[in-house]
Each structure stands twice: as structure tokens, then as C-alpha cells.
Length: 246
Image (spheres, rainbow, N blue to C red):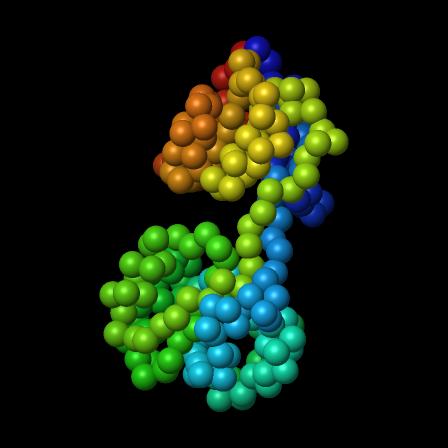
């Protein structure tokens, strides 16, 4: 079966996306649709978690979503974030994103290389702060593991949730391949299309947790990324398409 159409469970990218280059090169149709979206909790829900923003001297940010929802709730709760606050960000991109909410200069901002484990030396360098981790309702056990091994006091605050988007206006059976990046995306497929049968539809997944969720849902995984040969999803799909279209 030749691959002629793909549905990617993410928002449409900008013009320079490798997906668009692949569509042109391989002469295939690629559509984009987020299967999940983020909804923020309100101040009342945060208070129910016994979170008082004024108690914390450091914030750990793992995503741009976490940044936005922390400052949104601070405003909602009329909490003026002090200039003395220490910010530990998972990556430089997240640290730079802070400029949307604060004056970057003269602030205590540090960031890691890429993975959450890269932050461990920073926690050892600044162990005396009382840290808050603004997070989603779904938190990676790897993050908890790193924080528990660090010499710091930390508290998790659920500030936003990942929820299934309404996809009832699309027909997934029209596509030769569906592409997923998270277990929540797989759950959204099951929720929106409870009568979905995979049959000849190819499933592409990114990361071991997404692969596990797909298999647990009774799906056959046809394309897996990342790997040594194909570190990106587009490379893995392109390799598979060429194999199939021979």
C-alpha cells in the first residue's frame, strides 16, 4: 500500500517545516490537527492544592506552557513576583521565553542543556531555595526522580491540564498514516473515534511512552522514532514511505 496522505497530531508548522519539504519531495498530502490541548486551572483550584505562591523563592520551568500558566495565576491571585525570584529552566529557549513576562536583565536565571537531568548541577549550586514546579496534570516520573535525588525542597503545583480536543469533524479513515507524539494523543484517538479499526492505516509514534500507549490501545506501530538511523519523525516517515512506495 502506497502512502499518499498523512495526518500529524500537532498544530500546523511554519513555512520552513521538514514536513512540508517531505510532502513536496514525496508528492504526498500532509494535514495537521492537534489531538490534545492545554487548559489552565483557576486560582480556586490552585488554592485547593494548598499552594501559596509567596512561600517560594525559586521556580523550576520545564516548558513554555508552565511559564505562561505560572504568570497567569500569579496575576489572577494578585501576587507580584519578586525580582529576587530564582528561575531554573530546562533549556535556554524556555529561559529566553521568560522575557515575555519579566525584565530578563538582572534576574537570577539559569538553564540546563536539554534534558531535565541536566539541571542537577544547578540544584546542587543553589540548594537553599524553596522551589515550586508549575506542571501539567501528567508529570514524567523521570522529573520526580531527578528532583527527589536533588538536595532541594520542592513542591509540585498542577497549573494546567492536557485534555483531548474535539475531532468529530474529521475522518481519520481517510488517511494512510497517523502520527503521534504523546500517550495523550493516543487516548484522544480512542476517545474521539471509539469505533476506529486500524486495518491498513499505518501508525507512527515518537518516543517509548507513546509506543507503549499505542500498543496498550491495541494498535500496531509501523514507524518508530527516534532511532540512530532516523533521529527525527520526518526522517523515520520518509524512510518508511520510500520502502512502501517501491
